Figure 1 (tube, rainbow, N blue to C red):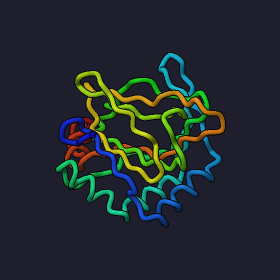
Figure 2 (spheres, helix red, strand yellow):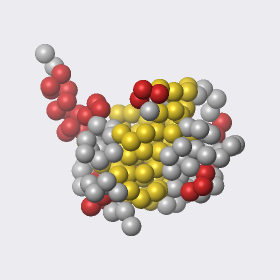
Figure 3 (cartoon, one colour):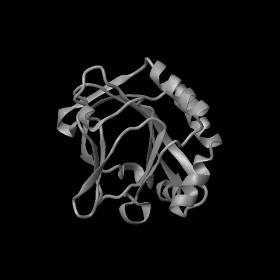
Figure 4 (cartoon, rainbow, N blue to C red):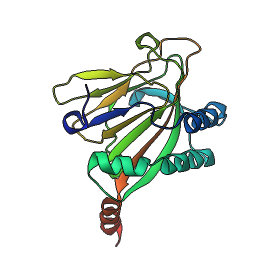
Length: 189
């Protein structure tokens, strides 16, 4: 079992009510403004979308008490959502081992809306622990994954192996307002 205390990852199934989960799914599945990210030198290949619908989905999360849940899990209060985007992995897409420590990110989250998923499909999230071991985390429907961003802990998404399979999610990062204020102070001349 993955624990936030030790592995800095938590998995929450059935995060939203069925009605809210279906609303998020419909918005992500109907998205038609995808940009293919394909960089061999950076070792990733997937599609993303960042537009006004992402803000609508983010608002659904906020009214679903995501903020309060994250504060309870992490022990931080007063969090902010600096970045949110939609991601889609299809046949051949993947994301190589990396950490999200760019831009001073503190925590990341992935909210999955993939209707059916199995290990054989690929597109599986793997969070690598301090012993260089990892547990596969399937992109199950209405599953929320929260992880601590740490330069020493990488994660990756395995290659999608199944034709006509879509691994879709809302992905983002958040900080504490205290962290954001410290960052602003450092950038003010």
